[in-house]
Image 1 (cartoon, rainbow, N blue to C red):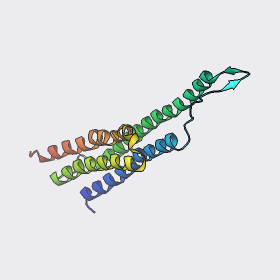
Image 2 (cartoon, rainbow, N blue to C red; image 1 turned 90 degrees about the horizontal axis):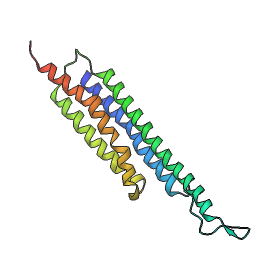
Image 3 (cartoon, rainbow, N blue to C red; image 1 turned 45 degrees about the horizontal axis):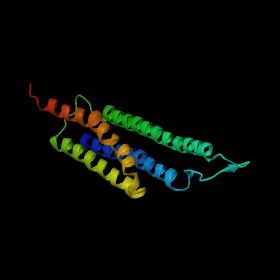
Length: 165
């Protein structure tokens, strides 16, 4: 198996791992926010003749806000893992002695773009159209980190391989 084919296969595997985090976490957010995990606000809570619903609703807002904090943590975890996957892919596949072909550079660029768009669409399909913002929040990381950490060095290696001495 030649190195170009191996790099393409590893790119597909890393993209699948990226999908696991981005699409998986959007699905998890959907299940957390829309399947009876969010607490509803109280209209009227009477204790000893006094309405304490404002105090109860503060607690409800805190618990529901905690779920949104978990979403932020998911975004950070997703970013870390996608960056790690891209860095490992880069370190494992791009060598100074490798000759990179234009077709591999084009394949890599278009695969990352198409895979990222597909991840966004699948995120919406497995959750809810109301979670489009969350799908964007989780989907932007894959193209950014994969292009910066993997594609640009691959393209640079292609250009260096074209220089004749």
